[in-house]
Length: 143
Image (cartoon, rainbow, N blue to C red; front, side):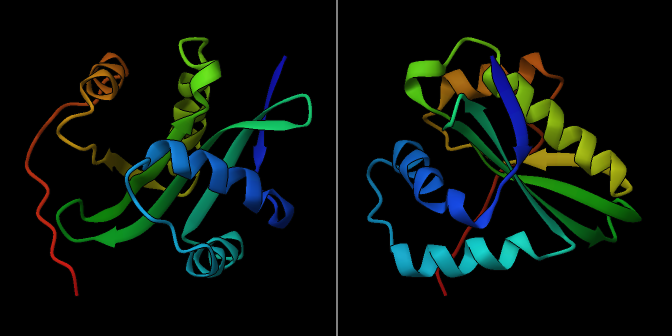
């Protein structure tokens, strides 16, 4: 059925296809994303996982761990979580999220967070079903 595993260098193109689904209105800079992807694969503070159906990657998730004063310890942040639209509502997203939570625990995190765009109401319900709560706003500024 579905298998979850760490992402590999050769998975980039399939992960990129999933990112197009996650951000359909965003023009993706493939070269810049490749640099970020490769850097994360060798980072101690980041983890990328994917779910496969046979040889095809059908889901991707990423976790960043940071040292955080507010938590007085490590905080895990889910940066991306996307499931191919053909495989949604089959438990694949739950599988990715549970793996990211397990990785955060293994890395000593005392909390895990994520942000989700305001219009993604289905995603909000998904995260709430998995014990996440909306506890604030996200503010952002381009540099």
